[in-house]
Structure formats: structure tokens, C-alpha cells
Image (cartoon, rainbow, N blue to C red; front, top):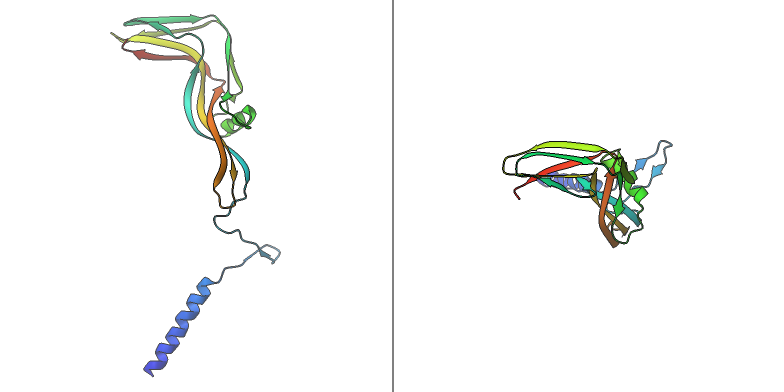
Length: 179
């Protein structure tokens, strides 16, 4: 009797193991089986990506400096603009860069940030320090990449480079230095 229990228990365990190995079948709403993608298999083909956004003031024109201590007052009387750019050899367009930035970081991202004349800025400078001011666009830096995705999800023929994204938000950036 002891031997029969052991044999029956072994058969039960074997059928559980075999059942666990069989793949599950998924069914669509119409009752037909649907194909399941294998894990780790990618679609392949040429892909592009913009990533690594960091907030950045993209200044244009002179840096005004005053101090040590006191007050810095700057009046900018010249209109200007700054363009979003992609550096390096890329088949990614600035339009694609802006569309991605609008979705991922800031809806105010634009191809060209422009500003009119007559902007004034006033700031107190800490004692013993120098105040520095520059006008520009409050945008982002990022990285672009273009690559061929292999069926095993690895990247091939990859090219990448830096990008600058301008924003409709423009103004002065202020910082202090010891010299």
C-alpha cells in the first residue's frame, strides 16, 4: 500500500509539472486564438528618440557684470532671437525635436524664441560679490539619437548628439561670482 501512494503522488506531481510548461492560449473577443508576442522580441526598424532633458537658460548677447556689491541695473534695447538646434549629423528634424519637447517637458517649446526691445532688470548684489546678467530663452538641453533596432531589441548603426530647445519664456538670468 505504501508503494501505491508513492507512485500515485509521483504521477500527480509529474502532471502538474507538465501542465505548468504548456503555453497558455489567449482568445480574442470572437473566440479565435490570438498570437502572443515572444518576450524580448522588438519590432525592428529605424527609430529616433529625444531624451535627457535638463532645464537651461540659453543666453544670447553680452553678459553684463557689475560690483562688487551694490545694485546692477541693465536695460536691453536690442531685439533678438534664438533658434532650437540639433548638433551633429542627424536625420531628425527640429520639428520632431519641438514636438517631443512639447509632449515631455514644456508646451512652450518652440523652433525660435524671439523678444522685442526695451527690457530692464534690477537686482541687489551681495556684499563683496559681482552680479552677472544675460538675456535669453528659458528652455532645455537634451540628447537626440537615431538607431536601427534589431529583432533582439539591440541598437545598431546608432548616431546621437546634443540638442538645444528654446522656449517662449524669455528673460534675464542672474548669477553672482566672486570676481
